[in-house]
Length: 191
Image 1 (cartoon, rainbow, N blue to C red):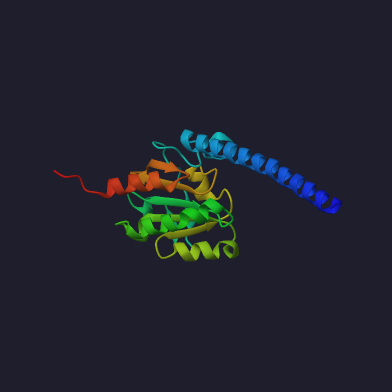
Image 2: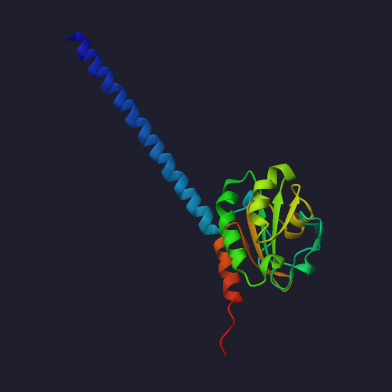
């Protein structure tokens, strides 16, 4: 009987300790949820409280690079309203947003010639991401802080930029607002 009482007390103590740890985990999850909501609501998405790319209204710097097939790529050759996405193969949010970007890019009227996808890393690291983007975009692979990233002021990944007549029309970490602006601009006005 003494063993049964001791075992029952031990199980009760373990359950109590488990309950305390569970409350601690729930409290931390609530704190993290509040912090993420504050970050998303404030628009602060980059490193050190900055945007991840040039803000709307900014002018993109000149750049000259080559796409994965070897053809030269410049901003002037991308058309009047290019859509640009910056990805890293080691970035979880990039992997989440890549299918949305590819789907939207495939449906754009300008085709792959007006969509630029910049993948940061070595050719070996980026091969899977490049394979997903090649059918829908002009793809550039460059090292971190390469010429295209510097021209667009990219400080985090993923970053999405919609240009309108050489000026940033929309940019950000989340693709949805950039895609919405792109879709709205693509619809011809009635009248």
